[in-house]
Length: 429
Image (tube, rainbow, N blue to C red; front, side, top):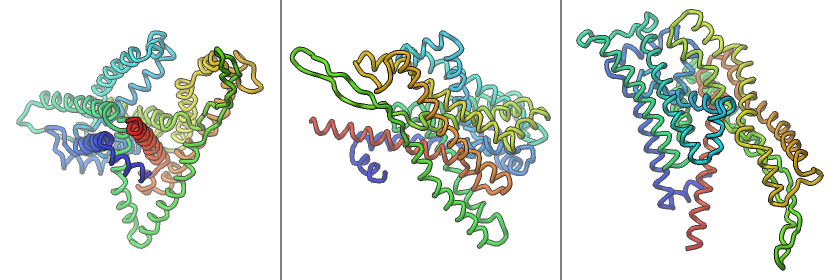
């Protein structure tokens, strides 16, 4: 991995892309510390840290924004509105026929879906901005604006700034995807989680009055995390290969075919998408609670954010989205038809409907262990944190570590693929 990064920096085009990606991520982190105009920065940060109403839900939302929410910065809403909009559009492809047709129209259809996703992101951002404004002005946080400016004008400026921050994050993510290395939205989540790790390590060391005990606990947690990384990588790379044979046939005077290849079916085809989607669904009530600030809704949000309800929902949603996303990216009917048109067949399986059924059964059998594995990795650290409230366990929780490893592997795969492409270009030149 390190050698690939070094080799990539030797290629001018790749070096420019990587430096561009790092610059955008640095700009994102800078925005996490720029407070919204009119907000008493220090007073709010103190009240957010001391407020008991923040609960686990707000703590997790702050984790996914990289601390921007606790600073009430211009990026307080983070990437969540865009991910929520993406989830809605993914679900709509199976519900609304028009959206389903867009997904099959190639580049033109993807542009339409992207455009609708952007508008939906801004709408969700506006709703969240109003909700956070009302929540932080309540007695729980006690944000008081300056009396020198009309309060209505300050409210408008705050909401406009937060929505503009959502649009700016969305723009930065798309810029990374188009001109940089890796998926921009995933890298923004990655850098948000990683940015909280140093403070979590410091908090873990000082969790007890005995400094030696704190260091020992922190070292033990880090050793367990490092030990889990190879297992996660193994599952992320694991494949079930479906063999495909191609019959020999005459083309003019030449005999073609007779080759054997395979269809690679990853054990975890969806990557970190189920984790991200499940997190957004589970913490959506927390966003609603921020909007309406109703007692029972806050109770529901906190119940879904911790405890046995959270654990069950996490497992169920991760397994569901693993199957859902796999079905979206892998179509057995199209695969079977493509194999048939190329004169291929799966050994021991009749072409046509039998091949479709065989592929579907393989997908079901392969996806389940992968989905259960990432669900267990995501939930077990959450259960441990419930009984041992160490901030490092939360920062390095299953959800966080899966997202970090998944995004890192995906980014490195793209770096290596582009490195090979540039090497081939140099060879042909």
